[in-house]
Image (cartoon, rainbow, N blue to C red; front, top):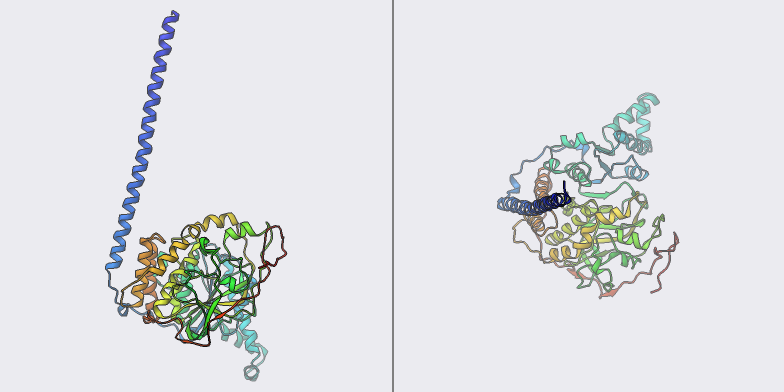
Length: 500
């Protein structure tokens, strides 16, 4: 074959390759374009389905009085003060301390990762009760008069097995309780704690203390005010948010979920002492390794160093007025009867966001029943379970983008619903529309409220026109707490004082 024909053949092959390449490229472009269009269609269809589901929920006028009531548990199982926590770890020393607090019962919510032998922790609780019982000399004498020391042992075991201080809700037990929320709660989720709240309420709770397995009360007792009404110092401020950590001597630290754009705002020091303040959610600040976000941990703490921060123990409790907010968590918090509805943990936001989003949601709704959020000086200590701070940062991204917008939305939100639970549902639907959580959380809210009614919880009365300070005690005052040492980069484990 001549060279001319070889060149022609090569030229033809080149033309074919170019044609095939362009054909493939066009197909790929069409495919990618098709994927984009498909994704847009899927997104549009998803939004249409969400809106349709929201309209269905909105269209239902729920008669809360018609919801069937569950059977009341036996009298011996009822108690007015409960501690609720969930864990995937073996029993910690903090959990064992909680199980021994006099006057409180503990309910521990298990998950699929919780060790199978966790149920034996109940014997730790029984042992704590037996120790208390043995102090009662009259009962000892009575039992010994009926037989020997063996009969005393049997009597103790029978008595305390029927009245244990600690309840463990295994995955199987949770399902058997028949709560509406059960089938909406995912496994391997912090939101399974919701079942513990309902269990406690069904079993007589008028006060619930919630915490985690790496926290414990400093004094060995649960303090707080434990009453809805009291005389408190209320912030006198026009600010949308305040940083409560500053009042307790740590002005350069902010709580997890605090809007980053407000960290540099001028601090609030003005307060007015008020009589008969209603505060049914009470958050205690925590010494040791407090609840701060990943931005703080990544920028203010040397690698490998545990935080050991202390807040001012002599600082006075403070209350936030309506239209002013602060994040609060689920680690050292007391809920009184009027606010037990506000314990619901959402399921469609990240783990590091869920309790803070719950806190903002509940805080706004408190105002409609005439109540407010309060913060107390340090009454617990945390030795934090191991975390990957970069993973926490990624998990918390909703804070960094949306916390400020969320607070602004909540302050402006209004509802004309005629009963409180309908307003709770109304706000939950509005939050879905604004993208703060998804439709499943509106469905969860509805199921939660129905469960509350079914276990005997009474819906609070509306009182949105209340004043944060019905009666003042003295004049407006400034409260400035002495600054406590804090954590800074290149300081290692040594805390340093900030020169103000």
